[in-house]
Image 1 (tube, helix red, strand yellow):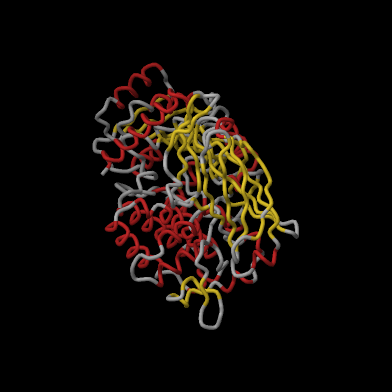
Image 2: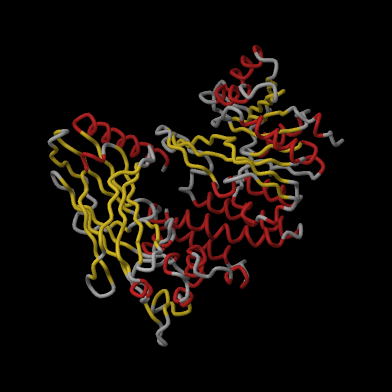
Length: 538
């Protein structure tokens, strides 16, 4: 039965958890704190053994809005307990919450108000990834939620396929049931991909709101990583490709060709680039298995999938993988997979002089780069930091790309350091670019490490051209001659600084700083913790 929007004011929040007694209470309380709009919190315990169920029973004894359901057997995934919740709710609206996350104040009211005002079957809001323990917050798919929008057909905004989360949305319960929109049961990693595809295939009236409605807590130092973070095993990649394939098939079979095509493009631009950036962290056996499986998966793509935006980093990355039976050029592919992409030398040419990926891969043409605007090209800047007492020296070298940079007239580099945890920017300077060796330009600037302060700092650059255009980018961290070695530097202000220039997973230059004896001890303690967790996970 369809409920009239004027009477559809009640929401059930389905909270799922397994062996998460540490965080479950915070999740449930964040749902209850939403106020009277939440008439019921359905807490589904997936047969925990750590006291999670007993904790939920105690909460239910003091809060009549909490209903606890305990599954008899552990399902092995997130889909089955969410389906259990869908079957149990009796309210017009439902939303989902994981036991280690929270709903921010006002989230449900904002979602329900939009659902009623816009007569929407689904309302989606902004999710924020909160990195713990630092507390740094990163918006998820910010471009989708810059301002409100109402879509009668999801295909009118194909970027929707990029938001595969199920937890930042409010659903009309009878819409899910009438269209049999459910999660895959059992152990099915990335069940959100399939659920989201089923949702879009049903063509709901969809409202987007700019309000923050979900906090996704990311605990990278946890002893047991979440499914989305535990990418060290090849089974994770196989599960991700299978979920992506299933989502594509769902959309295509529903006649949603635009969304299906966008889902394949999203895989190249997001999944492929993310895992390629991390290949250098894996052993040779993993890399061979990853390469073989990826080639098989990308072999399902057709010519039209590769024709759209052929200079996009994910498409070039996929073309190189398809053309190579064995893993190759991994350092260069890692740089190409960076955000933003960096295409590092060598810049080869075919026999006819056209740009190609490599002399032995002339079929991978880079000719489209000759006509793309220079401010969107994957330019490469090398960076090396030389720590010294007082002011350290940052040396930068910009590479030409088949003559395009020279033609645009590079004039200067805007240099800044961004604190990874706090998000603040420091020591912003503009330095001129001067011609160096053939096809390169160089720049140099000082860095006051003591004024930067403790923490992790990412180098951010902007290349400025003569025509007024610019290109935001990161820099490739040069690793030779001990440039990425940890060292102690004397400091008048702190006595000593512990300085660690390093390359991120994507090869970009970053910097860790610790001040004084206490800071140095803290850094070393953190390093030991990371080594312990890494050894325990292997």
